Every structure is written in C-alpha cells, then in structure tokens.
Image (tube, rainbow, N blue to C red; front, top):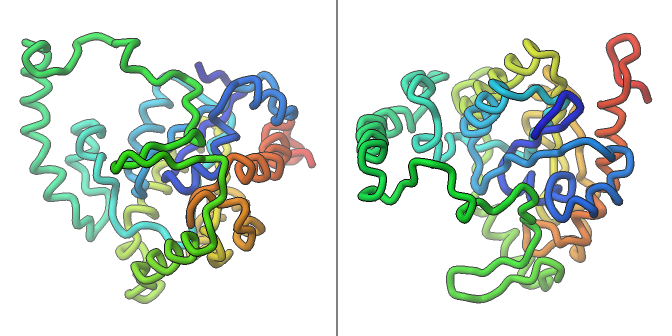
Length: 293
C-alpha cells in the first residue's frame, strides 16, 4: 500500500519497463540497490502501449485513496498523438464522456463503446458466472505486487525472449529502422501542439493539477531507444510541471538493450543506479521549495 513517503510511476511500456528496477522485481533487490529509498514503496502503474489518458485514469483512482510524495512519469522522444486503446475499458464513465481536448479522434469510438460496456458490467453484476467476470477479487488471477516486467517473455509464436541477454546488432538495427520509418515528425506548427499532441498535453496537465492540489511532486523520466535521439520534443512543456531527467546516456550501448526499445536486466540496473539518487533527492526535506541536494 502506498503511504505518504512513496513513489508512483506511470507511462508507457518503454519508459517504464526500461526503468522497472525502480519499481519491480524482488523487493530485496529494490532495497539493496535503492539504498536511498529503503523503506519506501515504489509502485509501477505502467502499461504496454502509449497513451497518457490511461495514466490519468489510473492515477486519479489511486489518489482517491493514497497520496504518494512523488509521481514519476515516463516520457519518450515524441509522444503519441492518440490515447490508449484500453482507456475505454478502464476509465470511469465521466471521463469517457469528457473529450478532454479538441481533436480527440478516439472520442466517438470510446464513447460509443460505453453503453455496451455498462450493460456488460450490469449483466456481470447480476449473473457473474455467465459473463466470466468474477464479482469479487480472485487472488489466483493476481500477478502479485512485485511482478517483474524484466523477466523472460514468451512471444506469440512460443519463442522465449531472454530478458538478461542483449539483442544482436542486426536485431537492434532492424527494430530501430522499423521504429524510425513509422515515426512522423510534428505536422502542425508548434502553436497547435495542444491539438496534434492533445492526449499527452491535456492529460499531463490534468495529472499535474491533481498532484498540485495534493502537494505531490512530479518528475519526468525520458528513456531513449537504441541509438535514438536524446532530444525530447515536449521538454519545455514538461518542465512547466517538474524536472525532466534524461537518460540519454543509455542510447549508444547495445549491450543494455534486449530489443531496440527495452533494456536488459543489466541495463535496467544501470538506469536504476543513475535514477535512485535523483529520486532520493526529490524525497529529501525541502529547502526554499526545492529538494535538498
């Protein structure tokens, strides 16, 4: 359970899985490697796929019951233009009804799904056995509070991806080329970034508003893909709400990457050792409104 001394992490799978040693893995490893954070509970709310709206929904729910001292939001070189595909399944109805920003191209589809979702949930409440949705918490379905997202991964074809092994240079290069070929630079002028990148900007503002109202600090942690740029497109925007920590030093090291965008366990440890003192400084007593260095 989160307490007033704790840290919540949010972001997409690249930003969070790359630094999951800040949040996941055996608790003894956290305590050993994050000595500055011993006794603090660090919770990882990251999900696969980009989309800041779902981070907002999860953090808003968390803040109804718990108030951590620090929220770390994972960011990448360029944010997604659209929200998360699972937002329609998770967000409260009041959030789905609110488009949040002009140009939300998923709004109609998400809103259109809402009546079906609510009817299905009603049916599940009345007859849970027929819907396959348990009425009560089922411990057997719970992965546990220390689920290790750096563990080996079984791919759809049954191949096991060894998390501790770096990818080959050929595999890394293929992944980087595919990522960069599918990346589109900003289309609209910077003055219209609130429209083009509305999901990121609108929901970061909302997360920052929730945090400010509760006296919670926010920091942003940027993690690069292999050989990727260390420039963060939205850096100036993020710095309105908190510091931006840029782990661009990882980018040239092939040995840190299990694929083009995710770190090996060894790479995650490197990132943890770099980030831990920064988190500790943010949690230190404040001097003139700033963390003690």
